[in-house]
Image 1 (cartoon, one colour):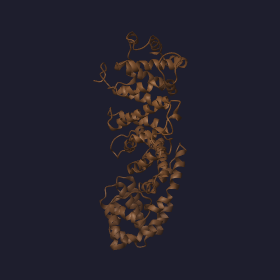
Image 2 (cartoon, helix red, strand yellow):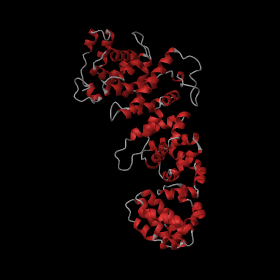
Image 3 (cartoon, helix red, strand yellow):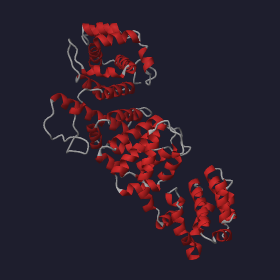
Length: 477
C-alpha cells in the first residue's frame, strides 16, 4: 500500500482535498515558519474568490509557504494535499504559475528552489505525488520569464543557438540542468511507466507543453525521446479497443513540434510507421484538431524530408485521403488550406510513383492500396494492354485476388482496377467474362464492407455495359 491511510492509492484530487491537515504540528516541529503557518491557515479550505484575493495581494508568499511544506514535510498525505491545492489554484488561473518565479519581499527561498523540490518529488513512491509534481513542474518551466536564455545542447542546430557560445549565467544553468533532468525522467516513464494507465499520458502531455521551446526539443532528441514518442502516434487497428483521443492528439502534437528541429525531423522521416500513422490520422480521425495537427506534421516533414518521403505518403494513400477530406465542411479554416497545400505539393510525387513497375510489384505482392495510379486515367490508358501480356498473366493475378483476398481495401481497389481495365481496352469486357471475372465481382456486391460493395457495383456496370452506355450511366448518376 503506497498511502499509509488511503485504501485506494489512486485517490483523486477531490478526495485528497477533503483531508484536514494539522498545519500547527509542522510549525511545532520547525518544518515550517510561523509566517508559513499563518499563510497556510488563511488560505486552506477557503472559497475560490477569497483565495484569489489572497494570491493577488501576496501570491509569491503563499507559493513559498507551499514550497516549504513540499520541501520539508515527508508525510504522504500532507504532500499530496499541498500538490492538489496548488493544482486547483492553477486550474482556476494558469497564469498563477508565474508566481513561482517572483521573489516575495520577505522570507527565504527563491524561484529556482521550486525546480529542485519538484524534481525530488518525482522520485516518491506514490504515483499521485509523482503525477502532480510532474504536471506542476511542467507549468513552472513553461511559465518562466527567461525562456530566451536557455540553449540547445551540443553544436549549433537548425533552431537553437550553440551551447558553446559562452558560459551561461548561474540561474539559467540551473534551469537548464533541471529541464534536462526532468526530460530524462519523462523518457523513463515512456520506457517503464510507474503507473500502467496514467504514466504515459502524463509524460506525453508534459512533452507537448515543453516542446514548444526549441532548446527543449534538442534536449529530448539527445535523450532518445523521439524514438520513444514515435510509436505513440498510431491509430488503433479496427476492433482493437477504444482510442485515447487526447493521448493521440498530444503525441501527434509532439511530432509536429519536433518537426521544426531538423535532427528530430530526420528521425521521424526515417520512420515509415510514423509517416503511415499520420496518413491514417488524416484519413480516419473525426476530431478536427487531430486532423489539423497531423496535416501540419506531415507538411513540415514533407518540406524537410527526402523525396522518398513523398513517395511513401503517396503509396500510403494520402492523395485519396486528401480528396475525400476536401469534400467535408471544416469549422477550422486552416484544414482546407493545409489540404490544398498538400494536394498541390504531392502532384510531382504522384507523377513519379504512378509507374507500371510499381503497380506490378503491388499486384504480385497480393495487397492493393489506394495509391494514385489506381484512379489515374492516364496510367490505365498507357498500361491496360500490359495486363493481357503472357496469356493475361497479371489480369489472372488480379482476378485471383478478387476471389481469395480477405482484405477489404484490396478488394475495393481490385474492383476499381478491373473497371479501369475494362474501360481502357476495347476487348476488355469479353476477356473478363471469359475468365469468370464478372461472377467474382458480382459476388462482391454482397460484401459487408460498403466500399467494396460500391466499387463492385461500378465494376459490374463497366463489365455489363458498353463503354458509351457505361459513361452515360456515370454522367447521369
